[in-house]
Length: 424
Ligand code: NIG
Image (tube, rainbow, N blue to C red; front, side):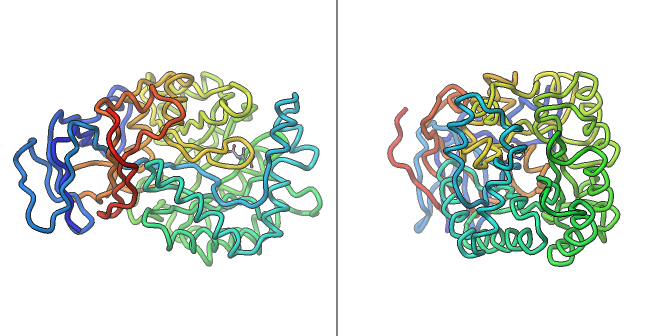
């Protein structure tokens, strides 16, 4: 398919494949440009009026609206079964997230539902959510396992994720969240995860990134470190390369400091983890250490909106020159949300990012978290995952709340979604 977007305000995101400090705000804007897409790639970017449509070209008049890379959502738990709406009502009545988990609910309630679900059922519900993600402009996303906990159920989740990915035009990057919760009913649970589940997952999904939730009531620091160290040592190639593009980090990520600062940031930096995610409770000294490292800090501001009004201080990370990304964290407990525009709006209001920084933290930097260097930019040769907004001003992504700012989604060079006529 050949597509020509004429007269667009283009956020090219041209420049280095990951952005720190002041560079995060540079979106590489071209105020008026034509963008030609052919055979799944960006073929040409030229000043507006320079490219003429040929017969057979899908001709799109952008009329000054914003054309930008599709969102890259680098942290989701979008594969699940069951419902946590009743539990959310308990939270509204005052129950704390970690207390619900301690009482056997929370993550463990979703674990029970996932264990009872079939692989086909998990695949179908994930596929429905992937459609929502696409309509909201997300063209690449990460999906974690972590609600199975047994070897068989973790593999069931990862197979469901792989199967759903094959039916979606975007790209799904799977992560094995083997250290999500502790199954108190199983003696020797942590050792079994490390010595049985981890090798089984690595055998079937070589190079897959391993994740853990280090928190009081979830994985203690020492056990999380043991899991991640074993994962690094076990990988045939310890350089993360699951997405076909290597970078100098170990194939591990970790949920750190969501409620309590347990010292995981220091360990993650020492282990050269790809990212530490959450950071709502991080102490300034740990954020400074993180900012000086190659490990990304991933902010998940929908959690603060949904749970308790606490947010990561991403401003301090950016100001200290750190690598920052944001994500929806889509999951049934702390962030029931498939909208990166809402994550951008929340990050700007509550994490201290500017609209421009949040856009880069939702596109080019999360591409680097997932190891992709072929996308998240609009320049010749890049994968044609782009979105046309309803707006002529990209700051509307952060300003507007609750609507869908995305008009058209092009994924792998094909038009996959069109919302309708322009409103601005
Ligand atoms: O990142 N906190 C750990 N994991 C998810 C929540 C999962 C759930 O509550 O089901 C998170 O917020």
